[in-house]
Length: 307
Image: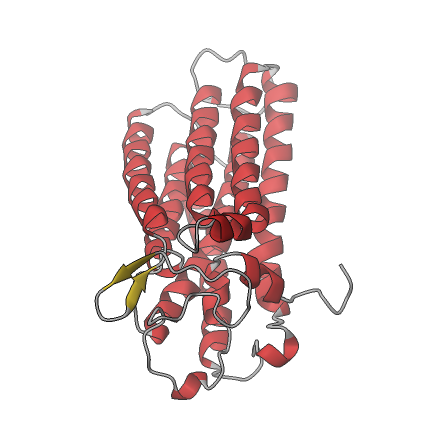
């Protein structure tokens, strides 16, 4: 990727439905008070295939009913996993895993109003989108710290462990959310993402595209070391690898296949629906992986640092 392309969202927003696409500066945005989906699809300024979904009354559209329904399912599944985690009293990182699940629930709630395409006033959608972007960055950070918890550098479930994770995640959430809001409403002029620059925003590009990816890759590497070198087991790697593959498939649907699905379906669906599904399955896989390595019968080496 050339230096002139780094930070540009135009191609992403042309082919996909992403929350970051909602916070861009639209033409005459400060004068516009119309509904976001009042015959104007989410990627209306980027070409590609506009996602209209299904028609509603009053010349409105519900862009992505499938994603909305799957987001509700994801919330319910996450609540169930929260409950199941609470039952694992002796599990390492139980409270920390629950923090990750809470972050994922926030993401899915926001997804209903951002990429789900419920008809909303533009500024309301931008607010939800900023929360969505901040939640993604913070939740991926929480997941990364969950990997460190597995090595027991701090006693899990303590005020120190939970306080460190929650406070650092809050800083990332607030900082990323502010940049997204500043971009959306042009408060300071520092994060403007206008059409004249191909909607270039290096700060959001790093925090929304690159930072979560780095967190996920490092998490996978740390957990691989934990399982293979510390626990000396193979079976949990099947769950971890499965979660990684499912997440990757979801991203392929989002960034590669989305526009083709939209065209083939006559603007009814795109890859976001499948991205939501496969991300949910990936989270279930991650929870299953965590559950499998916190069983009481793992042969832990002496001096490994585990209590």
